[in-house]
Length: 416
Image 1 (cartoon, helix red, strand yellow):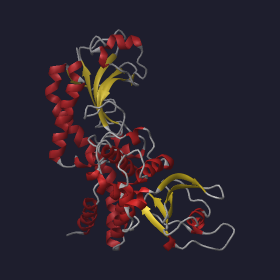
Image 2 (cartoon, one colour; image 1 turned 90 degrees about the horizontal axis):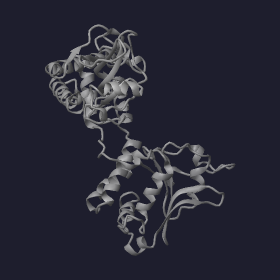
Image 3 (cartoon, rainbow, N blue to C red; image 1 turned 90 degrees about the vertical axis):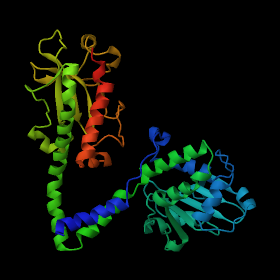
Image 4 (spheres, one colour; image 1 turned 180 degrees about the vertical axis):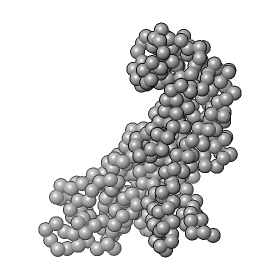
């Protein structure tokens, strides 16, 4: 086995060991853009821990939290029932502890960090309130607080690390909730599942783990490090080649639809054609917009040289749509006014037309029109798993076949 194959085999094994967690779909936390807001994420967690929380599951969450996170196995039901869970507990020096859990035996302060910075003496101050329990320090990856947070302000005392329980959103909270799912009734189960998805989006440590493993492999020997440098030089070209291979397959799949919908390949302007060399800089700038253009032959406009195109394009993600191009100016029509909409409606069902820049209408290969990221749409800028899977020739051909079929059902069939 040569040095390049051995290095790639090592890293490939790590990729398989840490597959990406997929979202369960619709997620209210993501829609409201609150996955990175500590206060709101804390509110949901606090309600779950509260025996009188709106989840209606009594002590279920609190009991398992004591058992699985705190490793306290002898807490009886009466104690749990008489436990208070409060948010933003105000301390004597006017600080606010994110969550506190207290009963006749315990006072447990919980400090939560997502992207917030550490504050001077914060952990030291909060730990003074703890009784029969450590301060819980909850971060994305279970990080340890720095001396800045553990050292007494204006003093010399330092909070020992063994007085702090460092836990992570990524593993501890996610896994704790995952173990409870089968015991939850609806609709609480769906809500918790969405919360877990929000945690995954906020604290997915896969990239961090992958980088650590890759670095370890590269530093195994000078030969591995040199092989990594050579592979790095090739990756940009490899990804650009993949985009072109995908377009080659899409072009083949489009062939049988051309006579059916009166399309012809655009060859005069080759506007942002995927075959142009400019796309070798795709990964050096925002986008070079590689694409595949077809002229809608029967679409005639009053303005001389105005042409309707069906175009498949990659900005970051791959999509397709109908656009307007000025062949006299050799440029796209960036502003589609009402007059152009009325003219276009002679050739395309009016209800389909919802202009955005030069696009009359468009969709992703999964049929969606909302500008967003999707697991089943290749993102060639970030190289999501869907994009990477297209390296396999059979997967790529199947994708091209399904994508063109979707573009026909969602776009082409509405040509008049």
